[in-house]
Amino acid sequence: MGFFNKLFGRKKEDKVEEQEEKLEKEVVKEELESLEEQKEEKIDEEEKIDEAVEKAIDDEEKEESTIDQEETKDEVIYVEKPKVEKRSFFTSLKEKLFKSREGLFGTLKNIFTGKSIVDGEMYEELEDTLVQSDIGIEMTLKIVKDLKAEVKARGVKKPEDVYPVLKDVLEGYLITENTKLDIQPGRMNVILIVGVNGVGKTTTIGKIAAKLVKDGKKVVIGAADTFRAAAVEQLEEWVKRAGAEIVKHPEGADPGAVVFDTLKAGEDKNADVVIIDTAGRLHNKNNLMKELEKINNIIKKKIGDQPYESILVLDGTTGQNGLIQARVFNEVTKLTGFIVTKLDGTAKGGILFSISEELKKPIKYIGVGEGIEDLREFNSKEYIQAIFD
Image 1 (cartoon, rainbow, N blue to C red):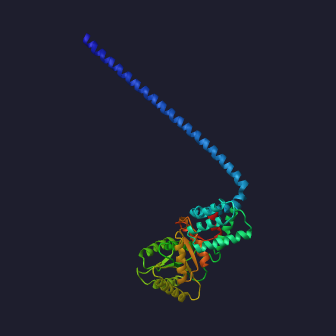
Image 2: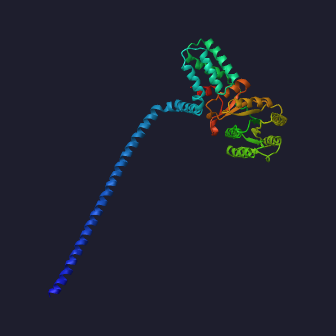
Image 3: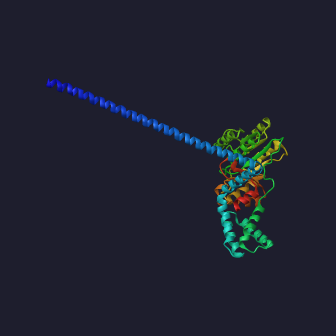
């Protein structure tokens, strides 16, 4: 009996322990479920509070916005919008010409602010700075001579007052007439683009085409630089982006034949503008002269006495080399203007004054960046303000 009692007594104890463990697990489970429910209720309550706060803030902002619109409706529509746009464009030009403004023109300003009297030493320092900035000796002497005369005529005595006079003198060298492309309605307008390799000629043509197409013009481009396959490929890419059309021949073909076919295509398609790219090899001036003379004769034979643009593209970072190129091309073809590229990449920028004053031709565009919008119609006042202020 003692054995069975012990046996059954142990089973009873085991059963009790199992029941206790089961009960404990159920209690723990209920506690966990209760905590989870409390947590979810707390989250729901916090979310409701956040939603209520956000709604209150939104209602307050809408109410303030309604009040502001009622009080300033006329002012916003009529005054503020144009001011913002104009300031944005000018600020952008100043930023693009930062290197020139802080380089050459910043140095010029320091010459006058660091002096106590207007004397020969000041003008000598000005001469040295201008020559070192690729303006050239002849142009430098002219600038100093004209500045002295103007300072005397205005009765300027303080060196710091000479800087604004210099600003006016330099602005006077920039041609202000015929700075826009001569595009006339009701006819096929021709633009001949010339320049040495590497100045951004092909890119410039693409940007001009894009601007004209955007203005609703039908544009045909002739790839007459047949000596470089890469030039034609690059031009093709720009033509696609611009939405224009291209006429091209195989590499090494006669440039004159390309020009003839381009003009014919322009007539057949009723194009508003025909742009012709040309080779830019300066190693043989005689060959260049003959080639451009041939191209000009083909154009004149096709359009008669109608005027057309003949524009030289120059790299603004090349200084006096750019001026030499301008002289050569002006001898071999009748230029109507210039496009000066890469002005955002130079701390000098004096070439604009040299070519404009010496060759008496207007600057049509300046390039101040990679974007299409960075090829800008030249405005002398805006340019002077951007580099001097």
